[in-house]
Image (tube, rainbow, N blue to C red; front, top):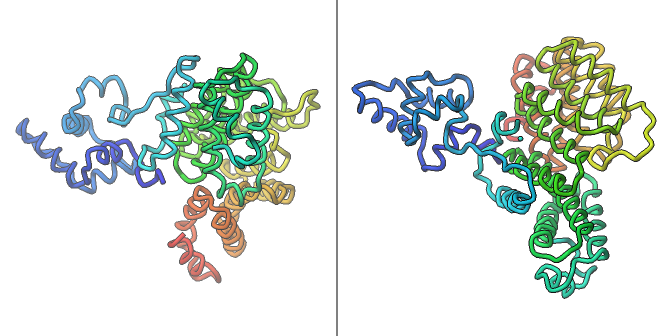
Length: 438
């Protein structure tokens, strides 16, 4: 999981095999070369890596010297983006699409990669082989015969079946999805195909990259998720599908909000909203931006986006909703509206919205239910209804553990400090014991 390496400074240490004590020693040596003392210790390094404190300019100069980084980098990029490990997405264009897909697949296999792109960087085998003819696929992969429509039909159908599996089952099929994406990438790279078939392959690659990215996101592997979503953005661009690209930007925005960067989320969603017209898609994007505005305490902007999201979801659409947001429903609108209200201090109204949304949510969306239950538990804790909070948190933890969604488990675990004040309440001590080992 990426939360083993939470910060670029920790990542830079890991690249060199340094412990925090090793880094302190390197800073001391750098300071002595200038007749100075660094003043840094393990506690200081820990605070820097946890984001609780930013090193002073003098300390940053010593850190740069320890890592052999020109001091001019400090002027070009803010802390911590000048550290080694900063990763920039490749520009969109046909020359980069396959490279982005290959890069994403490598990142998906690398469990030591850094957790995510910086905000500044963002402001940018198949399953069931018996059902197809192996010789035909092998021939297409080698370029000896053209990738025909029937083969792409099979690839699309298999992808759709894997993606449509219930949440609890999808955790067991991710290797098939990864292999499916690798096959499609090979066909794009080395197969012979018409322009129309190429667009279909790119569309399929975008869909698979998005799904594989969400799996990594749920496992807390944010860097790999970002790489896969970058590949999805490249592939949707190559397919000429701007609407799908808007959905990918919205995934990045969701991730930014999740990682405590709502200002970046607002920026990304502004671009995404400008790129789609379907009312269901616009409703989802507006709702996500409302969440970011609420996290920033921007009441008027939040309420405006919530109002527009509700109106868009109610609008009659001529065409079906895009595949990336077809699940968007009144349940999502209600619960996320409730979370907005909770962030803005309107606790009683938040409870009503969340209860309504949870009642509407179908069982097939258990991962979403687990996240929504955690939102609801936060609301109960704010209202000091501890017994209800314990019951809802326990249900969310049970569900998250069963479906194997580490992101949901982490979200539940983050409630532990709020329960510390209520250890005398029935059920709290047992729940705290479970959260410690979750």
